[in-house]
Image (cartoon, rainbow, N blue to C red):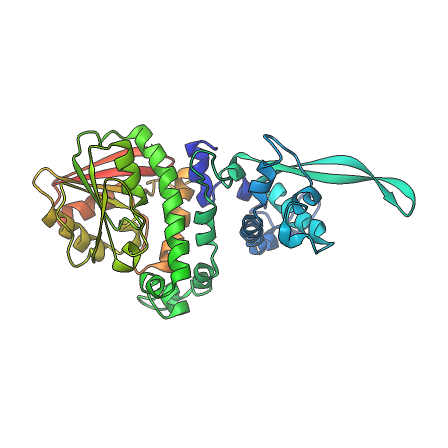
Length: 390
């Protein structure tokens, strides 16, 4: 499994984008040849996530892992393990064309070997590409201890329902209060998920697996759960996050709070109670509260309303834990920036007012809701736990 830093590069700043296109301010190279082809490749970058999605749907990464640690295997060997490809004599050829792009993007490793084949009665030596897992693609193989991988999270962000929203992205510039998802689908994303069981499951599965990975990092660098007796996870989805916290700290009583259609499909966890409701109407009483990837879904006005609801239900001395990727004050070509900038654009496409924020912007939200102190704790590559104290 990759390190936390490599895991949090999932949102886009890793070798898969760094190796694709050279961009230059000059119109001509030293020999007078224009950079038109390199600039044109920017429009073709969609091929990489689509190739990645196809590979995930074909179970490529898990199949490679089954050949053994550090295995280097050909497309024909991988295709031979795909039941649905057995009747297609060209399966290996087409699979190789997908995998070689992933190899060039460093999602897979790629090497070449010589192979002797019989062609028309003659032995002919051909070159065959071999593919292996990299740190990036290791995250897409289910772990032996718990079956977790980031496949579900990436399948959500590349789902057609989500991608359709990006075709309407220009609307946010041209039309006041426009939300691309709503323009594309005629409903808010959470309303849409409530009536579309497939999308509801894709969303919940994606959030659940990434929550597991994130909390492994949080537990390593944050000790604020040690003195807690109760934790209410507001907008906690199917309860993955609070269940992991309670499993790690069994003296904590966990409560998972979300919309009825989410709670209806939430599994039961030891030490966790599920409660259905609307966080913008009222938040249940709780000694401490968790808002993980909730505030970034909403504009400032809705965030302040939610935080005031939390404040009203907290005892004096209680706190709200905010877990978010934070925008750095100085942006650059680095994981910390991309881990916030890429989901920021995703949020702009999906949610009304959704955006990533700086620490000072979160502090402003907390103060507007009545909290007296803000304590940010950096975790990894822009991921933060931010404490709001009442």
